[in-house]
Length: 302
Image (cartoon, rainbow, N blue to C red; front, side, top):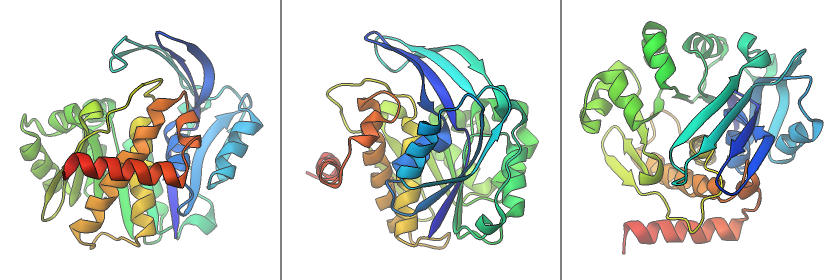
């Protein structure tokens, strides 16, 4: 099995009350790739500038990523800078420098067009549609979006939603997209747009799964120390899609497969805030993963 992810490969500058890290590895595709934990090959499509460090690309390759689809273009890589408040939940964006990402046009290698799983990370809906148009027949397509696209490109977003199987959004985005205050009503409205399964991310409050036949609420794992929560949502997606590909899931699979993948996504995401950038993920091994899965199940079923 192979997972194709299309998204950003970037640098982040992150400031917290304890430390500031300059231009650390970030981007949705980067977090997603490492979070998939090498279950299946992750084929990465993105763009970086000529300032991007070779060792950061190698890190992705060393942890299950095929980086042949990451284009290198003249100019600076996408860079985001932010400062977290003391609660490590709220944050202020200090800078967003698109660099070469501003002209990003995904180029999927010909030999990757038969990828079984496709994750369209948070990029312009027209680019997401362009990628989907080029694919042969993926077993499962999942998509992430954000308030910017909901506000500025509603029609292209609605069009691509009619062609995907799973939508990942946060709670405010679900409400904005549908105009519904109730998340249950919002999920049903989104399902009417196309995706048969809707995952609502609620940050420190966990995530909700609205499937074909069931609803599941998964709590967030309580951490002793939060160092840097940047990328946790992308790690959730990587853990989720990695589990689904390992299970051989497709759009017609039973809800039970997706419910288990929700747990995998939650456990995976829980390691991300324990270090800057991908440090928390890199410290994870199979024993730590199993122990945390047991801990999550214990939170849900005494």
